[in-house]
Length: 199
Ligand code: DGI
Ligand code: FE
Ligand code: FE
Image (cartoon, rainbow, N blue to C red):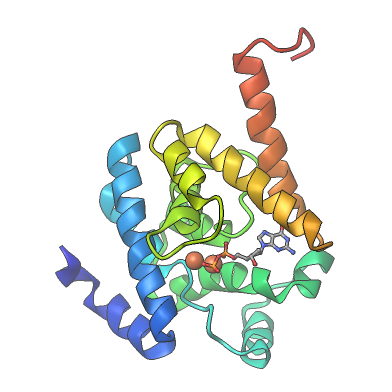
């Protein structure tokens, strides 16, 4: 199946460092497995995983130049957090470079770092695959891997919570999309469990 992906693999091999290239392949494989588990198009999941970090290794100057060319305007939190840039840029870049017009793929890449409210199934699969891919080895990853194949919403929620805790402990700004994703899944869960009469 990887035969169809030659154009993408060539681009990634040329433009990503070795570690990032293998990370991308690992995320593609994890996305594929999650798509299988949760009943989603496996090829779309694989492709999203492969391309999700396509702009990750670009310099700050090059990214700023590309934002200008594409007419992308960053909000204040994005401006202050370089790590958020590659997702915003990557989503636009795959349209330009590879003529990918699939909105689900574009959005999943756009929101793979922060999540958002009302995540699509592909948003969730990619967000989670990026968090738990085989190359991740941070403290707590095994706990998140257990959730991943148990319940998709719970797993994404736990990852968002993990991320928010981590960012808070480092006094970093938390993007509103990250908070929206967390709140949305929490309220959905409360509603399912009939936790409050108001919902
Ligand atoms: O590109 P990867 O390293 O594979 O993973 P990623 O795209 O999920 O990026 C992870 C980084 O993004 C990590 O250093 C934390 C940061 N991040 C995620 N959400 C937020 C955030 N940083 C800030 N400041 N605010 C966020 O809401
Ligand atoms: Fe990323
Ligand atoms: Fe990644």
